[in-house]
Length: 217
Image 1: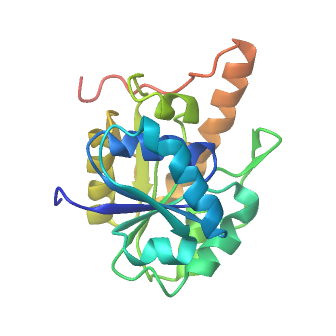
Image 2 (image 1 turned 90 degrees about the vertical axis):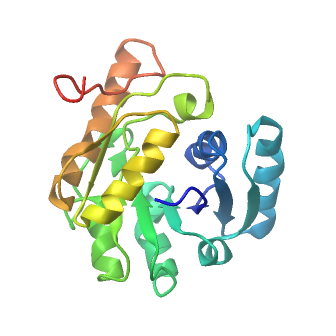
């Protein structure tokens, strides 16, 4: 993958979007924060800039953000997921969509009608762009602390080339990435987030994650 690329984070004014932007800034990635409200995106950028290690960051509308991006991260609560993907349909050709969304109801995972959030996005886009699931099991707290160690990231999807590119991005921000298989496995990976939330609550932590052993050690 080329060293210079741009990542748009749509719905990027939330905790996950901001934290991911800070991590992407460490290796110098160009970041565009997207929001339905351009002014809200610009305010988020001004808040993030003092903590950005390197790279460029800008804020604009979701639609404008994806135009100049090579990768588009979906970082919204599940309730807004389908509408967000539908709003972007027709603008994602030759881009890779990275879906970080987890179907949760009050912190508890559930399987949506499509089988997973990733498969829901695939159905909506109907082959317009490859959709890759990633970053479901990493907390915004750890992403935003750019010096903190990160857990392992399981990456899934049906396009091998797109998965490889996303795994390279994950490695650049300081995590180990593993190919977690096809899109059909996404419901398992997304659902692990509910387990991690329960663990964090039980053990009074904000840093629960997963670690793969016996592979690549």
